[in-house]
Length: 113
Length: 117
Image 1 (tube, rainbow over the protein chains, first blue to last red):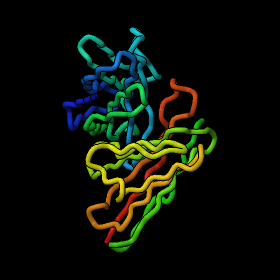
Image 2 (spheres, one colour; image 1 turned 60 degrees about the horizontal axis):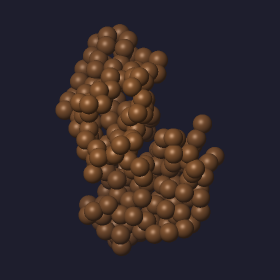
Image 3 (cartoon, rainbow over the protein chains, first blue to last red; image 1 turned 135 degrees about the vertical axis):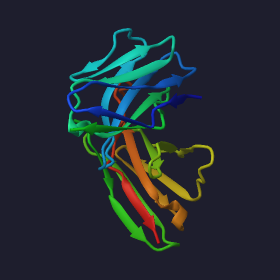
């Protein structure tokens, strides 16, 4: 069984500043992926970034990067130069060998102009 | 990029009605699709895994006779909410993973907002 925990129900950041969203997980899988999804008010699920567990290098996608600490089972998302359009729900997720996704409870990010 | 089409986007119907939601992969084949349910201000909860040509696998607590899943082709899975009641009102989202490429992430549909009066 997999569990994903996001301990921050809400976060806020000033526009142009940096914010980090926390995520911890637990899995018995030896090979797995970790994901961050963004869900704006439209409720579309948008893949922000993903990390392969066997890769030590942290994934980066433009202003989004992760801090993957495998031993600690931690997978935080850093958003640099925050923009108003970044305001959304963010879900951390992991998958198993069957590719079933387990989602965390989500973090609502507010961006202040 | 890979696109998943989910239809309808919004349904409002009377209690006792059965509602069918379609999930199509438009430019790839998907042996496996997933159905999620999301209540307001909550996370996505996996309801079932839809397998092409075989029975769906339901998560614990999900009534298979209530939520009928059919995956008759490699590009289409349907979820039918039978005899829907107000407590079935929710946001339902499907996703699909391209067949044969385990490195590909799941692609999500835009969801269906179901309201039962």
